[in-house]
Length: 100
Image (cartoon, rainbow, N blue to C red; front, top):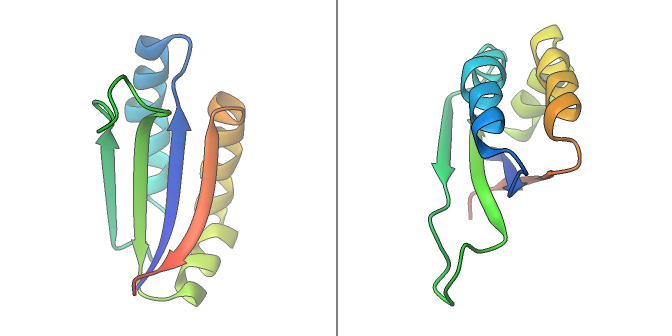
């Protein structure tokens, strides 16, 4: 299984970020072909104390790296990427990985 992992730093306006993420971005992303599961987590703290570096994480699961890459190249994947860069380009770190 392959994953695309998105880590979001704390936005200045959390209410506006949440409204866009959950009402616009997540529904766009959910339409990407080949996406098997999408897990979103709001980070509530760090074991070392405080809020931690990240506000939100998202794991998007695909059957394979090929399926992930095909999904990202699709019109739906491109629309999701364009939206992401428009509202969170300076907040997000993206990683691709495979379950060990």
